[in-house]
Amino acid sequence: MKRAGIIGTGSYVPEQIITNADLEKLVDTSDEWIKTRTGIEERRITDKNTACSDIATIAAKRAIETANIPPRDIDLIIVATVTPDMNFPATACLIQNNIGADKSAAFDLEAGCTGFIYAFAVATQFIMTGASKNALVIGADVLSKIMDWSDRNTCVLFGDGAGAVILSNVEGDGVLSNYLRADGSGGDLLYMPGGGSRNPATGETVKQKLHYIKMNGNEVFKFAVRAMNDAAEAVLKEAGLSVDEIDLMIPHQANKRIVDAAAKRLDITPEKIYVNLNRYGNMSGASIPVALDEAVKEGKIKKGDYILMVGFGAGLTWGASLVKW
Ligand code: ACO
Image (cartoon, rainbow, N blue to C red; front, side, top):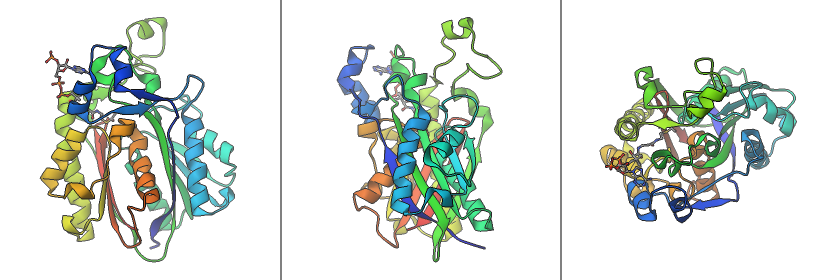
């Protein structure tokens, strides 16, 4: 069996910043409420002409550059997103064309905010079986496009961004364990009802605001803490590691209180947890790969470190990946 490891990372966030003060002008909220309840101070938003594949392509090119491989050597592209450019073709195919990876398979994968962990686990399998040599795994979302900017329960939480990794055959350790779970009975806690075959786009569904994110925040919060704990413990167990041996944990960046509660349950020291949600909000599938890339660039990850990535999201879905750098 071959081993999979990360040989390159890249990310991109749009330039336009929306602060909490900006949101105070849109909905009945306050900087104080948003900061204390979520930890978010600002988020990045794309302009109206920019779509998922545009920002994902930039992140992908940066990952390819750090991996230092020609795009033609990429033979698998998986894009985790809940905000594809369109229903079809897959955003992965649009990106494939943009980067000139003309010898690759390309498809999208939808697992809410856990999408990147799911895509990473799938790509790991392709590498381990030898079916792929170099996989480009992207998490990218433009949640600003499916946000009801008059709903204070959701519009303060999310932002846009894209992150990417190149997974390849490596000597040595690399990916030690992946864990994926889902519980479809919680599908109605976090969803977008419109635009699919259940509620296709019509004037009526647009009027009813069915093309926006709907969320039961309290229930998602409780689930998130349980799920992160379950996933982290599962990958640690499979790899035969204790939580003390983890050098850096990269959680899905949804809410600082969720991260803190999960860390407490897991008994991991806060200094070992990477947090950038204060700057970006929840970027769904992009949150983990963007945080990973920033941690690499900031020198927070060195060779031999154990990195624990943990996600949760719509579906409900959750999962974790444990990597030796
Ligand atoms: N500004 C001011 N007040 C607000 C705002 C706001 N932006 N949003 C809600 N409130 C009000 C509510 O209306 C409520 O008022 P009421 O008591 O008069 O009814 C009050 O604040 C308290 O609301 P709660 O929902 O109890 O607040 P809570 O402390 O639970 O925080 C939050 C809400 C931040 C949404 C939290 O539940 C949360 O973060 N949940 C997880 C959400 C999440 O992570 N979603 C993404 C999952 S991943 C994915 O796949 C996209």
